[in-house]
Image 1: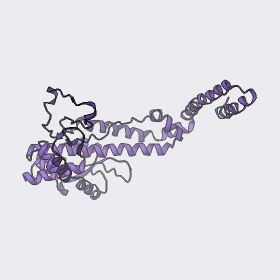
Image 2 (image 1 turned 180 degrees about the vertical axis):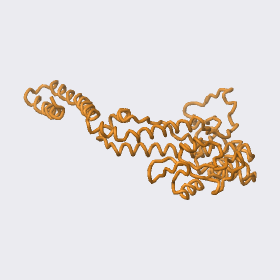
Image 3 (image 1 turned 90 degrees about the vertical axis):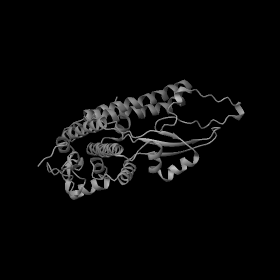
Image 4 (image 1 turned 30 degrees about the vertical axis):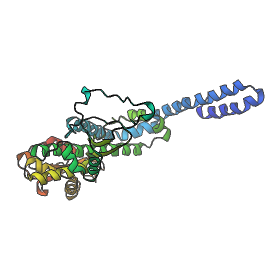
Length: 332
């Protein structure tokens, strides 16, 4: 029996059977039948949709879009694998694992609702330090997490900042591509609600579970009795990392070093270069106008490892494929 006819008949059974028989259990059975029928009908509709000529045609039409999407997903995984997202650490509690702690207060005097956390990215401090850290996060991050104002530290900060900025753009690009593919096919709402993974599998899209792993740092105050606690959380996202790099450059005044030049590659400068180059890859000529979801990156023409500076005349816009192929080479 066709699915659209089945549900009305079952609903009628729920209404009519008790009226005719007065049997409670028949009502229960009829309700169970309706509940069972919904997923069955949904499965039938789903199978028909995926087997339909309309779906198969759309799937064929966007095959090249899907292939490009999967290439970018692989690139995102490559960035995540080679990237590094760690900076300094706090020394508080570094040997806490060598001791055991027990609260022996009587039950009505216990106030251990707040328990100190010991981890490399957590600094246990006085209440004043926690509050000061919220007002001046860069200063306190450097002071209490051993982020020194030297060239090696600047290189580490720059490395993390670049990896995060590149990963941010790539992850956002993948999500835009997935939204575009969904819009092109425009599946029924129940497909995305109940069969989302199967939908992407049918289309041939490789979904990326990768999120940007922003390093999280915490200043924590816990009172002696555990009855109160306050924290200041600092997320090393792009704005925070750029502020940290700028502070280090100012302190060590090595702006012309490779580390200093990489640190000067801010989000604002990258955006400016892309706009200057009309969002077009200067190597292969592909542009956002032609490919709305093109992943563009900013490259040093003369690599900083060979003395190149982070100035507009030494920067160019490349698509991710051309940039990955170029690497640190100098191309005339």
